[in-house]
Length: 218
Image (cartoon, rainbow, N blue to C red; front, side):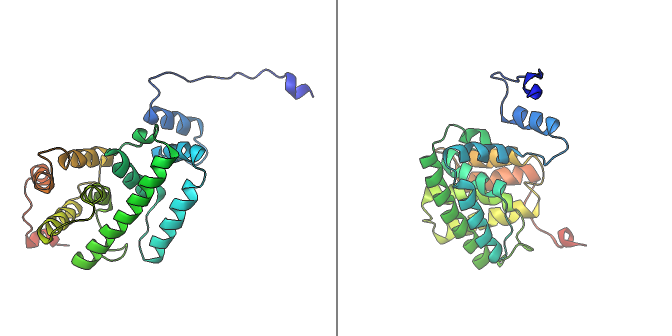
């Protein structure tokens, strides 16, 4: 019983400045000997508090993609749910969403990811994980297709796939993933947004989109 009388120091870390990035950093510093927490882990924990079945439902779909030869993780799927529901890349935008909104967004994201994978496999021949490059371009495609209700004509379809192939080839999302996803989401929004603006943004970032034989050396 004496253990109940021991006084333990409790350090409370609170304040409006403790955003998602700060919370994750604090957790990982305190928990340095254990498994590191990602921002997606923390967002998903918040979601599961209101919708306990969320993680299992997402894992079930991830397993079905694994059976098709695609190896995605929870963070990646949640990123697409986020773009569908909020139009943003940062997981902090999910924190005020209800369980009902999350359920509907997950269903829409899964449906649209399947459409994306079918397009990429059918038109580009990238039909399994070992050849699927630029997977972080898919959340942008998901946002675009969800808003268009999958109603693309052939020209629009091929332009979207052109952007996907170019973004993957030049490593658009190899660094600062959230920042580039946010920039590309912004390019398809608004009255002047769309695929032309998305492709032009990629061209300006890379300095050109012309592919030459030397790019394939080695």
